[in-house]
Length: 122
Length: 140
Image: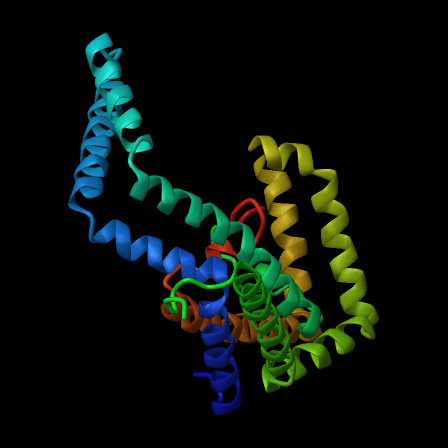
């Protein structure tokens, strides 16, 4: 349970972070992708073909030429979709941006904040 | 008059810089608030006590030294039972020193606070903050 002061500082930090361009653009890209049935269909196709290939490999078989071609077609279709690519760019940008913010937290804290909050597996 | 959404590129660039500067300033304020938390104060005190405790320093050095000697075996997963037992014994001895145990507890308590703040941030920004705070992913 966070103290009131720390909770307020955290919420204020999150508010400012949400308005930072990389985070704001990421939020817009997520909403746009969620609302685009064409992009959702392409991603579902891609996931389905990836799963077919993974299942084939897990069962010890070599994927057929047709299966590989199908997956490549799905990948090409996804790469050709503006909404998907905008989401991908926004994701890459926000993933590059957040570590710079964490460094600022660490500098003020005097300890490695990113390391302290890293998932347990790390 | 221009449609409000059509902004001067210079204004847009200035607004972008201002938002980034505000986020960095808020990050600094947030870091300072974490530093002022009782859990961090306790961690600093535990760290100080640990560094001034000769028994703790010796126990940590013994464990670290033995772990370093067995690094290759640990990495390759070829540790023998006797080597594992000695490592466990040294680790147990280290953790049994009261100042080491206090330091471990203080670290865990502060880590829990930090993780709770990260959860609050993640929920508000819509992306897993903890998993994306390090360059190259959480293990980077």
